[in-house]
Image 1 (cartoon, one colour):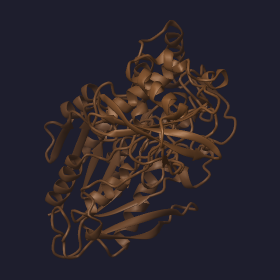
Image 2: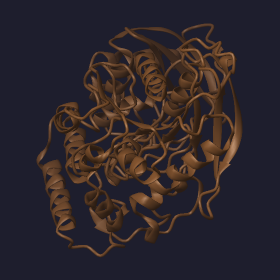
Image 3: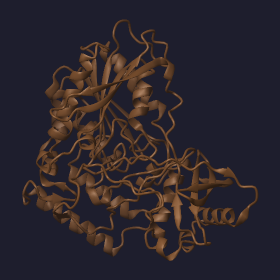
Image 4: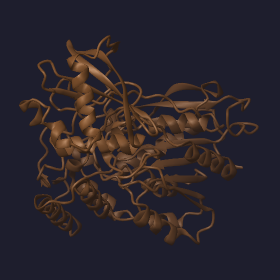
Amino acid sequence: MLLAAPFAGALAGCNDGGGDAPDDASDPGDDSTEGTPTGPPPGSPAPVAPPTAPSPTSAPPPTATPPAPSSTDAPSPTPSPTPSPTPTPTPTPTPGPLARTAREFVGRLAAGEFASAHDMFTDDYASGLTATKLERYWLGLTAQHGAFDRVTGTERANRDGTETVVARVACAQGTGQVELAAPDGGVDGLWFPATYSPPDYADRSAFTEREVTVDAGGCPLPATLSVPDATGSGSGTATPAGSPPGAVLVHGSGPTDRDETIGPNRPFRDLAWGLASRGVTVLRYEKRTYHCDVSLAEWDIDRIVVDDALRALERLRDTGEVDPGKTVVVGHSLGGTCTPRILARDGEAVAGAMLAANARPITEVSMDQVRHYFEIPDGISVLERGRIDRLRAAFDRLESGGYAPDRVIEGFPASWWTSLLDYDQVATAESLSAPLFLAQGGRDFQVLADADFARWESELGDRADTRFERYPALSHLFHPGTEPSLREEYTFHDTVAESVVADLADWIHETVT
């Protein structure tokens, strides 16, 4: 949700459900930094490869992602791919060769023998998935679910007519699945199935939902309105007398749906359902670059992010489901970075929440993300250092005005990058009188607690009505996990931590009342 294009990726999943997404079409192995776009313009939904494509697992791109950061979110196309249905497994009556292959493969991963696990691939499949990439996926699983414990069982399954086996993996804080196809002994298909499941703190009896549309200037944006029960019988704070407060959720970078979907994760659905369970009406909408064709000439933060957020606020106030004088903006990643700009232009929203918002220039944030990607797991190689240097040179030229507005840099036109560089989010936040809520995950590798959040605290620390919340164990999506934090963990399902939702709901009620 915030990675520069070739360094971003669509993300996918593994947990108790099933699903998968395509491998990143544009990986940090891509040397490009500038050029003319080929294919759909940046921001158009990325195609989803069929599950049997030798783009093995589901890979990057966050949003909600996500991801690619969506805060400092360099326009990273974190096209949140929709997980494909997981085949219905059937119990394996006997171990069988396929089940033994699955257990051996997982055992090699758990032992850190990634080259050995890679040797189990067929030659064709091995060429599309390196041992290093395989290691990153395993690190993503353990980062999200904790240390590996054991394989608890296997089931036979069928994917597009091919027999597969699903190994159930138990970890210290959760479970995952590893699905293999190995018709002739060699592994020629690998998936980490997962599906979304709502958080326990979402009380579906406490609110209702209906579909609405945000009229966004020739691009009608489908949206969902989550409305608390008037009795306030939800699991959290009771709905105040009269109309409840309302919040608009603003996405991070990339073509993102209303749930800010990243693989099997739906962070905006978690937030909407959690807040609605606690007496806050929530409007979430499809992002312009997800739902409509957007020409390169339109790529700047106002036309892609800010203008539509303002229209969404107007639509929320017109629903009759909120007190128009009690509306707030809740932005994640790039949406959080743009929240001060939205508040300044709107003039009616009473407060703004900035979740994982970058305080530094987007080029600095993007460089840190790229370095982080290459550093894990084996450190930066000489070849990777050259790619980083070329990216730095492209950004230096960009910052000095050396590119025409329509020149494509890392998958996005220079006009987009320039609009982010010209926007001073810190100064804009300082100029506001509206209360602000800033939240940051300590494990976030896309927006850094020690660099971005520390700057927010330093610059806004003396500002009245400003609340800062750090969550040491949480990621960019505010999911709990362990080190190292890396984008492949978005492949595995989790939900936004309840502590974040509870703090945000309490702050909204305290602020509007």
